[in-house]
Length: 152
Image 1 (cartoon, one colour):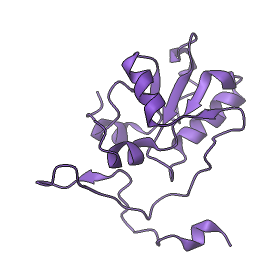
Image 2 (cartoon, one colour; image 1 turned 120 degrees about the horizontal axis):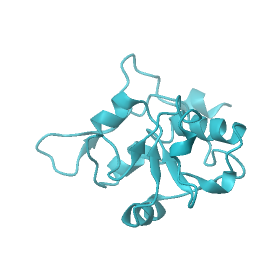
Image 3 (cartoon, helix red, strand yellow; image 1 turned 180 degrees about the vertical axis):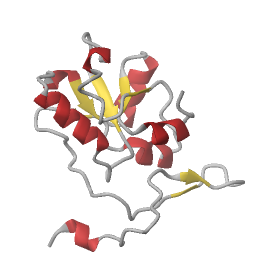
Image 4 (cartoon, helix red, strand yellow; image 1 turned 90 degrees about the vertical axis):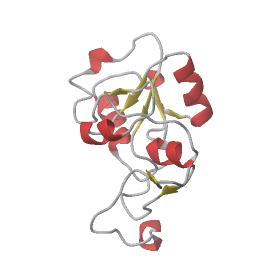
């Protein structure tokens, strides 16, 4: 049986990024109904990273790309990330760091935006070893209580 058939039905107005609960520090509301579950790997030659590795990247000011659309990015993002929407990634390929791999993320395990960006980069000839995938995205980052900021 398809795993998607076991999930909570999609709400008409889904909330893709967990939202804080006012007056309840550390609590967030999570909508589990949206999107389609993404594989743990975006591509067989692209390594998936966790929050610990992403954190180390951010501390070193290495490249992290939020592949979501600007409206999501402006609402909240992982501090230190740069927004290059998945729809623009090939056109903006020159903005990627040529000296070290870039971590790509989006809304989370149900979101296809960073996997789409990765697929498009690979099809454009970008080397797989220069791409890392943070599947947890904003969903896992927020639910783990890690810091966020409004996109610039």
